[in-house]
Length: 232
Length: 40
Image (cartoon, rainbow over all chains, first blue to last red; front, side, top):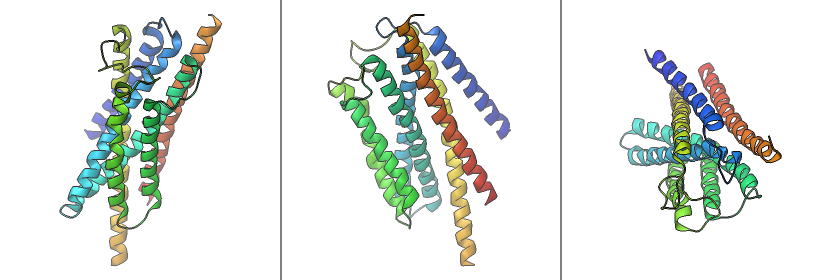
């Protein structure tokens, strides 16, 4: 039954990704100002949304780990696994954002990069979570998970700053597509395509997030049994 | 198709291809990690 549900989920996700791609390339109208190059937004914005969501998952997992590390060690380990999975998959999506954005910028602005508030805060966010992953990879000892959880919590503080950056400050980055002021937004024909792609990438992201969580839980279980065997 | 549209398409294609390479590359790395753990 579980395999059937997973298979169905994968099939729906792949179908939605294909549908989103078709809509982005063949259905969305050409932008009057930017021409065809604006279609990069259909992968760029959903990737940013998924990255933000997964950094929030990492925040929740980090808080759970710190809250339960003494009273409920099993729950704390599960929280730690969610924190790692959220951070790692979030970095994957954030990397996509930091590569697709400059590709679009090169075409639209004539430059790959500018140190405006939105781009800089996004780069800082990526660097914080890469540091988080490096800490987990190279630090050893019982304090590693606690230190990682603290870094994960502080890293997540940058997410609302990134989100609000082009609302608080004047940026070269375009105005918000959703939730901006009266001058922002996009044509309904384009917005629907963006929403399809957001749904598709969200489902894809949840799939790899769940997989990463399971891999980490398995590693925790194997490490615990190996430690137990070494004691006996 | 004019020169501008061709160049636009090339930028879009580059962004989409890089996105898929990153996503599928990560999925492949996860699959390898999963398999390595099954062998432990």
